[in-house]
Length: 291
Image (tube, rainbow, N blue to C red; front, side, top):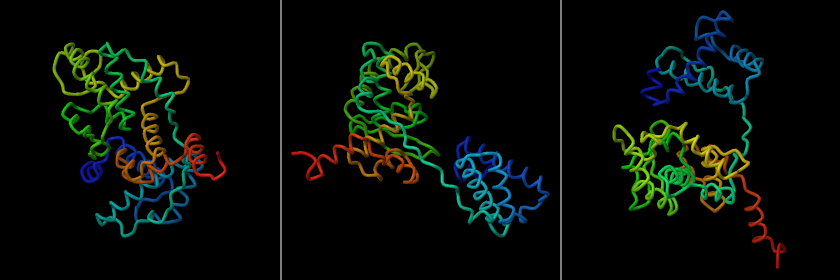
């Protein structure tokens, strides 16, 4: 656990998953009367995988358990507890990658039109939804934004993401206008209700920092006001940001950096093409598509 916390800088959730996976594996070893970690070989691993599939676990769950055990045995090797990593050649089951849901511009426009910009809460909600779409940041990243993180002179914000990884993200004029209106007016009025001052950008109705759960509730209310029939969650705005960027010609590496993805494969799920984009490219590219 110390290795995961200090050297790997893993989140509490990741550490808990690792511990659960190891507990599960140790229980299996106990049931099979295997008392030494050195005795784990390809036959033991094959039996373990069989037990996992008998429990009807999905491919993603099995992949995570294998990854946890690979990492665990790497740690044991490094500390001279074992001489070989029996999981090193175990392949991960390929998980199906569903196309992420996203919003079309017509649906987005409805979300941008429902907030009362004369009201502090309405100003906050407008700034919130503009920033989520303009930057593609995660809810956890959004709730952590502080006033010094925003640089209006060059239109960027400093974001601390997963594993304390840091990046700068630009934002456009619509997000800038919404943010300035909220920070200079609505936020000040919300902060007046608080017992103590804070420099978080997004505040709740009592002037305290808005939580991740609070952001989801805000978005649900905006969707309800816009009378949209589609389910919209904050991560769908992240999906929408990435999809729209790629459909408009942004390169994959740039989108990867903006999203804060460590691996390019995480960004590649957004390379699906919308029907509108498909038709646009076809009509402009095929010699006999139009006059």
